[in-house]
Length: 375
Image (cartoon, rainbow, N blue to C red; front, side):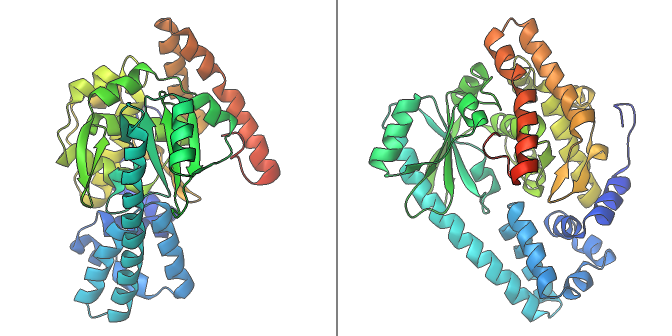
């Protein structure tokens, strides 16, 4: 579907409902009104699930980092209709996830303090946007050098350095296992992007960062514009799929935190990712409109730059997928062209390796069932 074609919110709603009932039920919990849930017979559908069906719903919520937010709503709705067994099941899931998240945040505070001893700023990126949920790992960014990060993590925090893929090395990413912490720590060192092509953009995110309190601890995090850019890099230029948390998180960022679209464009455009940022916001807006009846109030400059919207999403496997060949390749080509036009030779060289990494990852996945050694 090209930029001139469009789909109605009801088309997207019907597509999700038909292609993946777990996504549909979770979207009703996260975004839908009580009236919409009643019209969709959501409670009857959930009560009709056996133990395995409920376990699958919980696993999907966990994969999409929305257990607390979705199941708190489920607990309330089940209580309201007198379904105490379902309400208790939901409450247990919420309690378990909250315990995990709160424990991780305590560790995260100590890790940030330790890394700050290098004298360089440390930002928590992406992970805290899900709060009160939490992702499966904890992401940090620092302008320190690799040796300083590894020294602090291994000597001061007694962390184990996990194996690095080719992509990790290009992107200047390190993964650590900290004793007592279930989640891995992923540290982005001085660069952002799948191949570490973004240096100036990374500095801009640090310059605009702010302090956020979570569970009684203060963390340095990107401003709203920076968080949208980080999510765009991850979803539109690397994975080519969205989680439900991306929809909910981005909606909250735009509507509940100050969003300067001029600054957003000023940061994204020199990096060649403004079309991806605009497209990501359009997808989020379309999905929100499909399930809650109201999208985001996006300015004309965002809508005109978006290459497609929610009509391109496919509910395949465990995620909301973006067709790579039809859509992802266009964004990649525009990014490379922008870097070449600006004369950013290092970025062009790094980005030119991306198709080969992708091909190698696909081959490894076919042979081993995992692409972790490459991607």
